[in-house]
Length: 242
Image 1 (cartoon, rainbow, N blue to C red):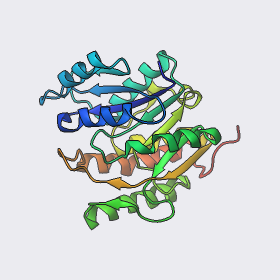
Image 2 (tube, helix red, strand yellow):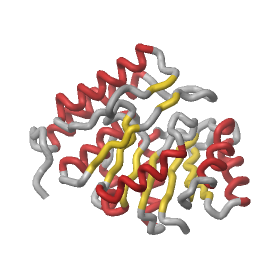
Image 3 (cartoon, one colour):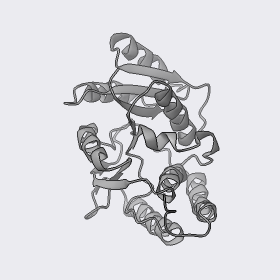
Image 4 (tube, helix red, strand yellow):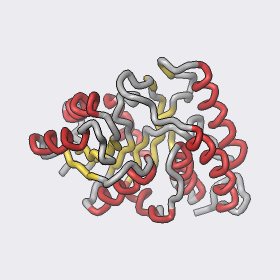
């Protein structure tokens, strides 16, 4: 077992999975891959099983139905903690997150408990997004900062690396959100507890294969969740002292 686990939730990602696995296994740092498949009708889960049979670094967690990104990650986090992984990643399976950035994240964990991949740190680095989508993402980040006080440039981003001790400090069964607000909630829980969080710049490329999972429900969930987090933090816009 390697100390680093990349969790990749999948739903109809058959076009991308084999290439993603190949890229990850060729990285200069050894990693394991956990595919969390939500019973994809396109056969992604079956392909994942075939890859796992060939490569001991690849593991598969099958879920009975499509139940949201957050639930998939929670299942993956519990699986990782049970098996003793030290560095636990969130990563999209559609190549919008560059697997070559993994070593940079691991290096950043020397001074952090959570490393966030930021599309906006030091400038905008987003490829192939329409202006409307970019404005929505940027506005969401400013909205989160205004309500919660979190100082991060990209709180809705989904490319992350948690140290084991950070995930252990979260009651995973109590995490409620599922879409973009899941990313906000996980970061806020650690930030308000005073854990060390840093951002590293990444280039985000919109998916070339498959369809985006964005929906109006995901946006609405994020709008109200930030107020709930503010209340959970005692109406403070700063971390609690550890």
